[in-house]
Image (tube, rainbow, N blue to C red; front, side, top):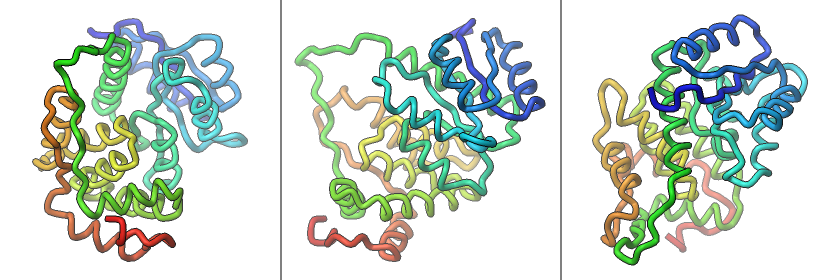
Length: 261
């Protein structure tokens, strides 16, 4: 098994949840540590240097966002991957955690299969990041083509219109709880922000849903081959593009975005 023995820190204030997560992951050969608070989690991260943190976002006292903010101050190469644990009623907190660098999220209670898939994917990303990247002149970065809708979002990012961005992400996230195809649009928004890690996570969730999502599959292939072709690559918003337009129009930012799209 890849990453066998990798150190994983489980952070949750509920003993039964920690026990469930620990028993599942230990049976797969991972080395598991536990913390029941954000303070204990930060201490364990400093001492143990885990490869991955499973982080409950809702704990008494300092919640999981304290850990995310702490990790966000560290250099990228010193941060463990983070999978956040949450309930769908806490969408804004999940959105904020993903913007701070969380690799994935799992809804509580999660299933052993979903846990294993998410952990394996996060640890695979860690291994990929550790591999030296080719710097030969044979590869050229893909120039991303943005639709007018994504150009509006990127302009809002440049102008630091946080309310507009969080409204858009939060609305898409709520829709994605009931229809995974919306994860494709959510990935596109994160990609427009420049967060390719979160974009990949959401494209994968849309592409791997039972009904599938062809647009997300195309976006995922484009992200994975970002250095393989000098040809311009366009973000595929799929059949729900018109709904994204409606969402943006409902909460137009203060800046005149349309004139820049």
